[in-house]
Length: 205
Image 1 (tube, rainbow, N blue to C red):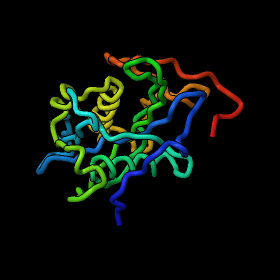
Image 2 (tube, rainbow, N blue to C red):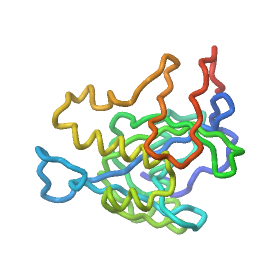
Image 3 (tube, rainbow, N blue to C red):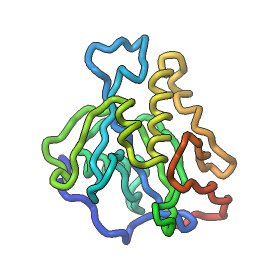
């Protein structure tokens, strides 16, 4: 059963060295009658949503990672709350470090691919957001967040090569440093991308 109320407040919000930790998903589905042996970016669609504050562009569902949940649970919850879809999380696309437009808040963003198995008719933010299935080409034009565009390219790379690579190595392109943080992939990101934080004895809870 899906709870039809979004979580609110930030008293459980996770931070890592002063950076607010956010998690999200790129929901995707395959088009009808596609040939899995010849998967290209035209074989699937991705789901974007409108921002809570109306403006230009769309985005993928994402939100704060809270202390009482695992990162995968948080990613699924945010996707249900904002986009009203459920499915399977498959690996991880990467970790990004960036600031907001004003440059006064730093974030650590984690993105996952979510293979959609169910679309809900009712979901917590149905009245304040719209959702749109579209091609990858359209998503590149309409997604307003540079770091999310990079995550989209990671998804495309994985889905178009998965028939040629062992399952356990599907996400081997997500580079990891010795600190365990993902490296930033520069694909024309317009966000203010930050260097990964240095290793520390313990992260903030």
